[in-house]
Length: 342
Image 1: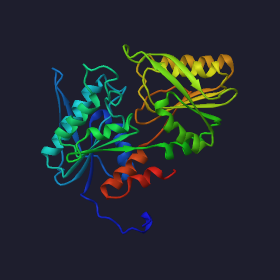
Image 2: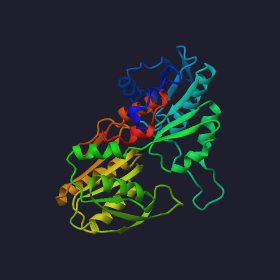
Image 3: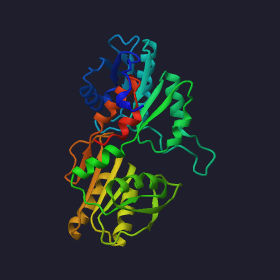
Image 4: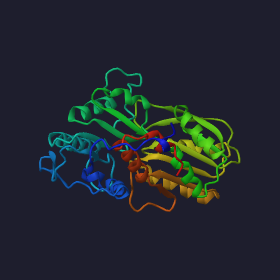
């Protein structure tokens, strides 16, 4: 039966939104879209480095969504600080007798640590974080374009599960509206090729890929990229899920320019931009100005940066996340929201 003809569904419980401090800007955007005020809460950090979160209103029996941003430039907290504060918030909600508890973290921590990568004496952080969220009391975790879909299998379905929001159907129309002229979409590695194929189909563009060789003895190190496909004289959209230090981007752009690519746009879901990402990307922009080609970078608001340069643009995803949360609360179709081109 088409979704438009299905009878209205009753909310599973009254909806409520709450946030940790690092997640407040994103949470406020979602709350404004839904017309639901944030539940007042107070994040406390002690001198020794310990923290806690106090909920300052009644959430008993509510369908509660707890927001946290794992990467932020607004304070000196680490990813681990922010994750632990999210655990405090989830546990506080459980002890306050919220009926359902959903952790909303657009950038899932440890998503790139989803396997051992040929070494046996190391943990699998993505799985560890999943177990910790379950143990704290989360029934569901909502994230955006997670690095590996298999992470969903790291949650015990009898306790919690992962809701992974896909952006392509929303992101591509926005890119078109920005006047993006693309002839070929390039994946930075063969692992992201299927995602890049979706962008290429939506943009009616050709598809190419880079075979990326990493040195796993050193973090964030790419020592060679080999192009599979033709980019000569073409405008390129290089798509990836995460940009961290931008080392992969630099290697990719160099490979594309060696193969006579024309203008290059880099688009990512999660602009982590750890140091020295900004300086590396600025150097690419300066090179493009000297050589007479266009370079720009586009990220989403899963991670927001302040005072960005002119070559950086941001696609805001709060409206999409709000629509997903509304569907979860009303027992509707999340897939329908993601597939709607907006």
